Image 1: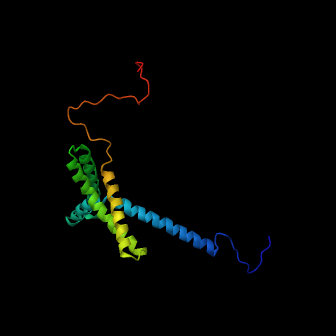
Image 2: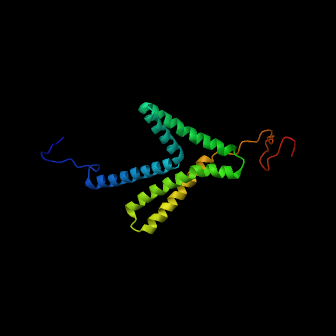
Image 3: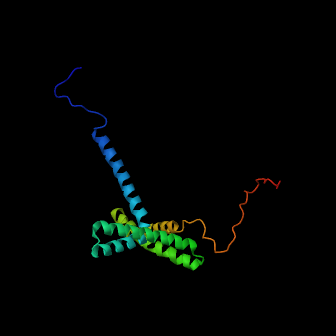
Length: 177
């Protein structure tokens, strides 16, 4: 092995261009994860609001930081679970509409605000910023609606008989059908 005094070790990984490319790619990935997290959390705006309200009230009532955090998380979870259950057992389309809107409207508002804030970073025209913010509100509100209505079917009414399982079309049965 020959050692040359004053020689610098130049590798591909530590080159200036390589580090710039890695920096840009990691920035894009980080921004993408941040946007995903903001929009995913915006769909849970109503449970978050209820949880924060209960948590702050608990903190002011003397529950401490840990107690306030626990009561806030429990309240948010119950809000979401009760909303989904109420949506699945409600028979009336109007009641289902109201329950869905209770979750979708705050989420749409949060989606509008987040999209408008991001649009201010790179879009100079006010009209285009508002258009993108409206599209963000529609997307986040729609995802919130879908999250609430994820139950497959409404619960059967009391006394309703379940239909027997039917084979798929074209599959012969054991009775020769």
